[in-house]
Image 1: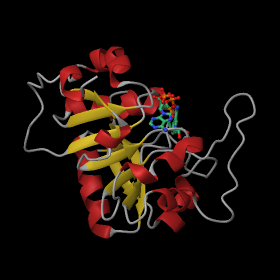
Image 2: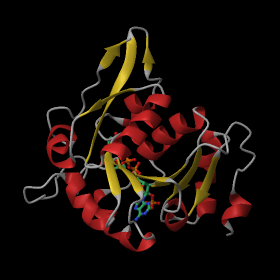
Image 3: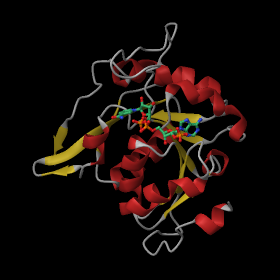
Image 4: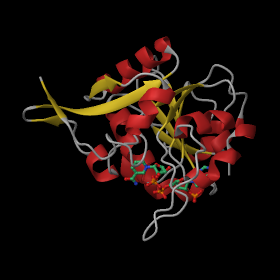
Length: 217
Ligand SMILES: NC(=O)c1ccc[n+]([C@@H]2O[C@H](COP(=O)([O-])OP(=O)(O)OC[C@H]3O[C@@H](n4cnc5c(N)ncnc54)[C@H](OP(=O)(O)O)[C@@H]3O)[C@@H](O)[C@H]2O)c1
């Protein structure tokens, strides 16, 4: 299957001057993030281990501006979003040269899901510090991981303000860039600091995990 033949490329709304986003994953979080990006006019590539043709239902449900690709194709986008299971992180390393690439880490470190919800042993590090090992040299910003996907996909503009998304990262310029993008989707952004300090607050089971805050505007 040729990626371009599958592309739902009409992309009438997507602005070619805007950044492209490649999402590694095509499930709940990938679609929630893609939905917001598309509304704001960005181009998005969704990917999974499946042949891109098998993502046609997900693509169709999201509308114009989104295409299906392989993880390697998604990894070439201006910004790459990790929305895949923790257990699959090791597949990332060979996808591209990650040096200086902008990567948004939306993963949580669950190794099993309901009913056990077993967590990976991070050996004292934060989850995004461990993710960094799999995308060497990338400029990682942790974001989109704290809210249940049903809340994340909802309109971030509530009557009394904007839904808050937390970010952490070690590169100030990259955080500024990602923060501006997330704000352009309609969210408020709270910067928690580095991957080491912020991660401890926003990763799975941390104090801010699951917190649905609305910042008054
Ligand atoms: N669900 C939530 O509410 C929520 C909230 C915050 C954070 N998270 C975190 O976000 C991540 C994604 O969660 P989710 O709920 O979206 O999971 P999901 O619905 O199961 O989707 C995971 C996606 O990743 C794809 N995938 C699996 N292995 C892959 C690989 N090696 N390369 C590329 N794609 C791969 C899967 O497709 P194939 O299996 O077909 O490859 C699927 O499309 C997880 O780390 C999760 O902990 C989830």
